[in-house]
Length: 550
Image (cartoon, rainbow, N blue to C red; front, side, top):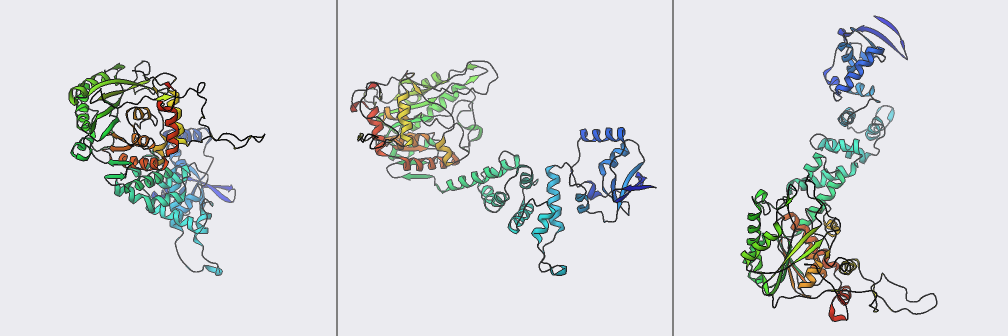
């Protein structure tokens, strides 16, 4: 055996066949990639073994398993070693790998080993020093965490982690907060699994981080307070049920002034409503879809008064770039199955349209439609909506507020500051002068996300219901959305001082909608609504008529 000094230890050359591998140490760190193996083999072949392996006096290999593998692969029979007087432990293996490039799994294994190495015990150690376990662990882990409470939380996470050490891997690789991981395990995990929310599965799959998971479980659990029927007297009635069942609730027969809803579009998405593939929108043909939707609408139409209106938001569906003619097909089916009279088609223009998931080339369609039906065209309610022409109108305008006195001491006329929800309503109505149609942007509906940070699928544009509701109803009238989802229609109805009636099959989105409704009641302001009416209804003075494109 050849010997020479290397730093403070002796480096020796010995037969590889004499080296004893220790299984627990060999597999402690994650396996390496084919690329890493080839790189090390090439380096040793070109430059020789530059770094010795570590063994003990029993020739047990503590560190250097990859170097040993490469030498054997190259057919080299001797290996440089440093001999230490120590047992073959995980702690020794970790000690020699402080600067190793490690996977998340490697790091978690090291942390577990440190906690296992340093036991819980009370009292004093030798020389009268108090045994402070958390300080020892903190030092062993490079002071990554400090404090007794934090160290205890890390240990709790290690013991109760999800399959695959999801939380600890998030902590070491993505800097997930220990406190939030501990909060999830002790407070939210059981709630999520008991109620079947599914956020833990998304956490495991990497679709959510720990902060998002805790927030979503908390907000979702908070919505479980809503029962299958949620009533705010004189404001709103919400039902968690199939909309066709409304025909069995006699108190609503011929009580509704406007049905306004966005129905499931054909062959676009699945909703979390418990119906699976049998849900509306996934029929085998467009004709079957239109007939089914028309029969559903016939069941809800029994709620309409003789003066009532029904407005259905619908868009085209494309198959390999070819429109299926859904809008006209649906219009004809509704007339056949409901006996309602088709009145008109309103155009909804989206300045920021998104293409459907297609790979074919075609212009992006920026239009959807509102099919308008009535029971009796002669008596159906209709309000002419107007917008203010700032150049002709000299009456006090809505402002963001003003001081009472100017710099010269002149007292200004009082002006009305309008709250944000009503400023949105007014601005939306005023903007309709641009294209003479309902123009309404899509995108994130902030009012829904205030209630539930995950939102929902295909949330209706926040401002879309404003004009239809104002055109077809008066204050205190009843507005019914049979496919309510997160109840955007209901919110608008309440802000406009109508009574919101809604049905929604999905328990999840029904509860979100109830939260949206509660917030709308809190946001309602009669003075602001009066101001909007002042500028938008003809009886208040000379106005320029708002033209809605057909």
